[in-house]
Image (cartoon, rainbow, N blue to C red; front, side, top):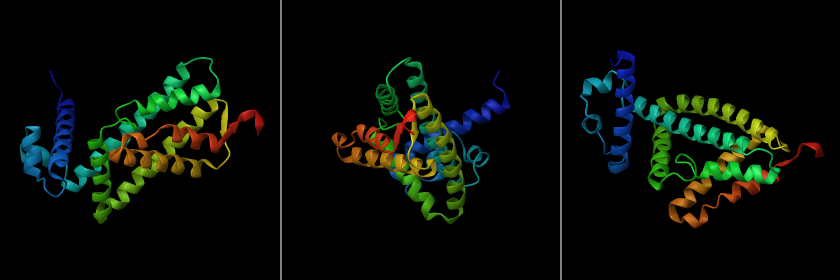
Length: 207
């Protein structure tokens, strides 16, 4: 039998999924709470028992999107570590292609990227979302910094710039490639990330 906690979790997940579909079709300002509830198969009561308003829903969607991307990065690093005794360049290449081949990495659909950008812009326009959004992003960047450090250590590399500079540089390049991919997938060349990584790291024994 489904427990109340599991039932609530499933309801929330279906509402998030329904909202993602409706927002993708109609835009953030063209979709009502009723539209989202209808798509998810619930009443307004179910919506408001999980979210206080649309802003809280959007924040939850942003958090879910970033968590999926972080999980994809974790899987990419795990793939690299499982590759065994390989050269540094090959290990980095394996991690990059594992990341870009995942659904939440560069390999995500154009609609996923467009929706992510729309959610960020929505949060930027809503004063009550700005601080929670930035707080959550800061926490994620700290987690990414630890993940990158672990991956580089395994690959026998270390940064030549502070980690607090490296993470935004890598994130900005990733976002740029996603944006270019919206217009022409040939311009979303993931080797650019490898080029940047090569420019800001060196073999550990060289330091």
